[in-house]
Image (cartoon, rainbow, N blue to C red):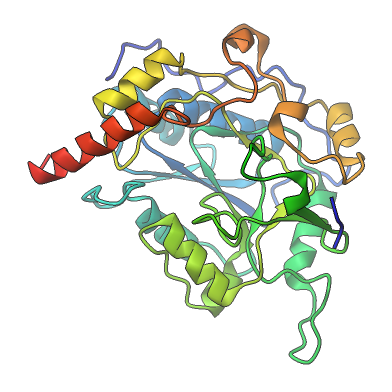
Length: 350
């Protein structure tokens, strides 16, 4: 790598026992940290509660806003109600109903509203409900990320320690056959990886999971497009290539059930059944494990399968590595059936 359907549930408990000690930070409490987590949610209550718990454990006191896309699932509605009732600083927002025509439902309208509601100097971190934080955040982490945006800028000379674009805070999914280690380079000044995904519709300049300082979006009058690919193209026009953090702190849960455009086809349900989709949360790193991870050689890529472990009491043996993150991944026949069912639904107005 060179450098450069709703089932009955038990009563909601917002403490999911993440089996990790409270993080310790010598700099004191996190409440003055200009880091705001924007969590986007739809109909996955168990996952949402777990995602929120992981933030509270790994980054206690950091601002959290849940933007729920008007979930119809009773359990998710209960989780949202409990979050509001807890009155612990978490804001829950449900926007006007979206028609759900876009691939990701009303995600991008929610993102636009969410990013418009934070202060200029706030560092935004977007997460999906099927994600979690996997290690305690340190003040040194936040200072390093903020410095990438707060370096003095000169039109005459580019500052090699300034980042004018999005950052990716999640562990890498297994690279797979389409990308090799030769496609990954490391910027030692910014402490980020750059991944050659030029031939893909997204992932080189933009991802729906990102960090960025709010004022940078406003400086370019950023308006989210209705597709991830459209946001990728927009980011290419305004920003430099997205940097994947050397030391990520979030991860997608593998084997999670999926919603696309608020619809779940028979093909999707069959794929989820066949592949044993369910709730497979990660164990959170201890302080010692996190420090060791951050001290590794940069040549050791932060690939989820290599650094993270599933909680033992949630069926780790049920998922083979490399993990899958979308039920229809590598399911060609079911993927075609899913597409046809969605197109038919549009024709009949369903």
